Length: 313
Image 1: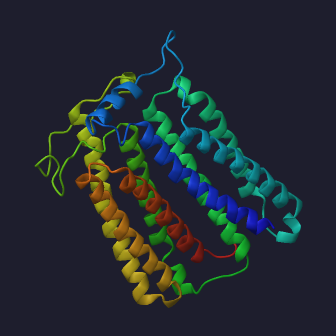
Image 2 (image 1 turned 180 degrees about the vertical axis):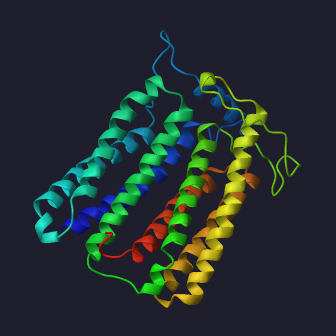
Image 3 (image 1 turned 135 degrees about the vertical axis):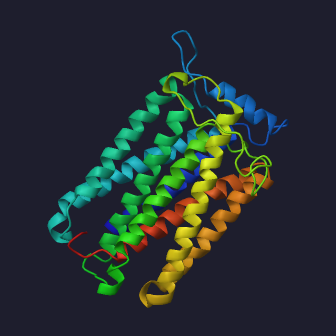
């Protein structure tokens, strides 16, 4: 029962992150008649910070309502998981710390979601929500893996990959957050070609970003800088994770299949990122880009779990 609840919560966390990307992109105007001009128009509108006499920003579309229902169900499941973990902590021989952190994270995201849209700009809301969604997915995946194999261990030679896999996970997390930064600032169309950016390897860019200018639209050079950093990060992650996947497949028979899946997901994720440029940020390719990023994250969490000792877990 406990494992089923955790796996269901994992699935809902994945759906919540991917569907929030769909709701966010749809709300930004993807699919409108004057695309991509409307993307810039919505960017200027949604970057406004609420002033004392402004109207509260609300999201009444069916996408956001469904997203709220998924979040509510996630909260109920998290409380149930935490309660069972505490009640059966002796039987499970596992600390209930992670399920407790899960509930705390759900509460934070709920409070943040109820208040942020009224007072904070999109450039803060989107990265925080994205980071929270990733943290939920990582926590739930780790809880599920720990419950499925609480006493398993791996060979010493497999543990030698621990630091390399941790670095891979950190690089992927940073790259995903750069992607959320691109989305938060409507910088996805700042570069209109590939592999160059607006016809240059190093286009005109402005890396300044003042906290005092929240609510003011960014310049084209600032948007280009945000997009360009995401591209550089993608190249770094692709090279490192490709090398890591191939090396594990070559020397670690026990993790060969998982590493192979990671390599396939990495190639598909990179292809979707390139497709976003050529397809002018098609809604389908943009949402799939988010989905494959989450799948890649889950695979890296799984690989990191496999090389941990039982005492660490």
